[in-house]
Structures are given as C-alpha cells and as structure tokens.
Length: 294
Image 1 (tube, rainbow, N blue to C red):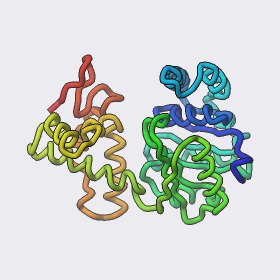
Image 2: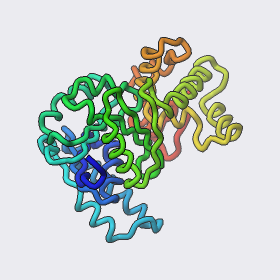
Image 3: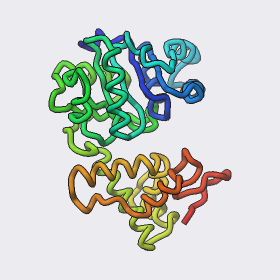
Image 4: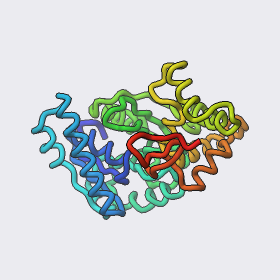
C-alpha cells in the first residue's frame, strides 16, 4: 500500500488522543471512521473536534468552510465492523497492553487484507503487539503527541516484522497530516517518553522527598530551565495513570532501578487523583485557578 491508496482512516478510541487524530485526519482530506464502545464519548469527541476547529478558524489557520467539510468526513460508531473498508486503522485506546491486544485480536479479522494497522501506544513494544495480529508486516507504531492538532511530532516505530512499504506509507501519511515524523527503534517508551517520563518521575521524587513544593518545583523548571510547563503540571496534563503506566513499562522492560516509579505517583493513581481529566492531581482543578495539592 502507498499513500495514494490511503483514502480512509479508522480510529479506535474517542478520547483525547483519538479525537485529536480524527481532527487532523479529516482536515487532511481523509474519510474518518471513529469507533468507541461509549456513545457519550463519541458525542463528546465530535463536540470537542468542532470546538477545536472553530478555534483554528478564529486564528486564520483554516476557513469556516473547511470546518463543515472536515466534520462531514467524520463518521462515528460503536461497532468495530464499521472499520472494514478503512485503509489504515489507528488504535488509540488506553495505555494497557492487554486491552490493546484484545482490540487487535477483534479488529484484524474485520479489516481488508491490504489494510495497515497502527497503535498510538506511547511505550509498549510494537513487536509484542504485532505478534497477536494476523498482519505483523502491516503493523507499526504511530505515536502522536498531545494535543494532536497542535503538536508537530509523530514518532514512527517499526516492529521486527514491519515491512518497508508499510513504514513508507505511514511516513508519507504523517506528512500529509501536516506533521513531522521521527523514527524510533522498538525499545521501551521510544524516544520522547524515554527522556521525558524519567524527568517527570524525578520531579515527583523531589516532591516526595520534600525538596520542594509543587509550586516551587514547577516554577523552578519553568524559569530555571525555560520549560513552557512545569513537570508536575505536565504530568497532570498527560494523566498520572498514563505516566505510571509508561514508567512501569520502562522499569519492567529495562530492569534498571533508575526507572522505578515514585511511590507518591503510585499513591496518587491509587487515589484516583490522575490529573486534569479527573479534576485533581498535583493540582486541584475545582476552581477557576488550579491550586497545588501539596
């Protein structure tokens, strides 16, 4: 398959990442089929996509007519069968290996033989995920950054069985989406999260050990290292459950104690304080202004 053959894109998962991938795919001219088991999530995703497109139009990045055309390209469904005619299917479910494998086992028999299957995983082995599919040669990682409509990078990860034509087609598709690709080898957490998440985990250790407060740690890194967001603020934005999942993949996959998840990160996740999406993490988002929780 080549980029000329890719006309329709299926997306599994209508959360923050899935809706963002649907957004940029529709703007780029692809027909989009977005699937989620929860109809309310699908409705919320479509509303978010429309709002974000309107924000882009207000800044002159797209026209009002582009919004109507792009939204018209997006179809939503609760049934995986709706992906049967898609040329590329991108899984954007939660960062849980067993959930992803279960999805792949179910969707592969429904896809046409030449279709490419990708995972938006941010840390899990592409080779291991591909092994449960019927098309390991047509499987690879396509890791978008959050928020998808704004962030420029997509990490492309080949598994041991990924065919060169598959990689080239997805690389060309990435560029058609207006993104820049970076190729990563199939090691735990790839490039971005291999570097970023240990920094965030170390910031949590700094808080855990009483070296600084939430506010002082984030202020220090924003003003002292010129980071646009402090590491704890960023952790809340990513989701502390996702941060913990990635650190666990690093710790288990590389067997190095420097990747051990901070006990405080584990405690926050166990409490359900997983960041902005739950209303509470290292900051409390209940009021007009986020307030540090420690």
